[in-house]
View 1 (spheres, rainbow, N blue to C red):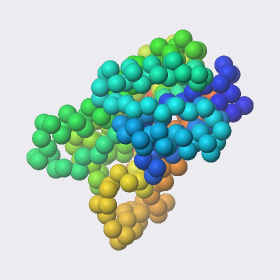
View 2: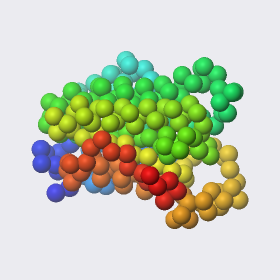
View 3: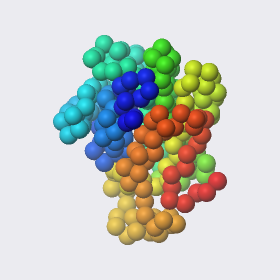
View 4: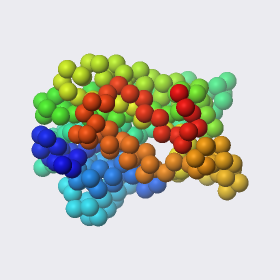
Length: 259
């Protein structure tokens, strides 16, 4: 049985933050499609998400939907999820909250505006997406939510992100655990994935080859994660095989943080 052909029939996965081709969101949407899920990709960049979902649909022969969303805006989230309900895609089965932003600014230089932006995108956006998705999952009798946290939430920051990001991603862990308890009676699982250093474009040229080699050397497995590494875990947690896994923080960091 593929993930797409669940015990309650075909399902659609919703993935946020799909626009960047080297990002975790795109890799996750692609991995869902490889497993046979229909995929709805959401991103703030309309052109990028449309191109990404066209490519994924063409490459893997699954139904897809692209929609612009600002995850911090309640009406935007509601509109995006409404477009899924009105489409011909199968019922909603999984939500992967991937959209996020880092915050490398030292604490004493953090403005209130930056603080709110980082928390709004990383934490409030996750809350809004979950709240909008859950009624359809409950009605459909199947639901998997995977929220993106970070090793920064557990270590108190990291190389590229400091206090606002750490606080937001720690909030994602609390949201995940509480929601897992509430949704258990409906058979819906809610889990968090906590990556370490991932080789994506989010660092926006902040490092050179020497820096990258140094970072990789700090990881016991001697390499950074790929976006595909993270996507594989997200999709597994969304599958029928993960039905008894909920409320967990799933570390994927090559051994750089072992709780």
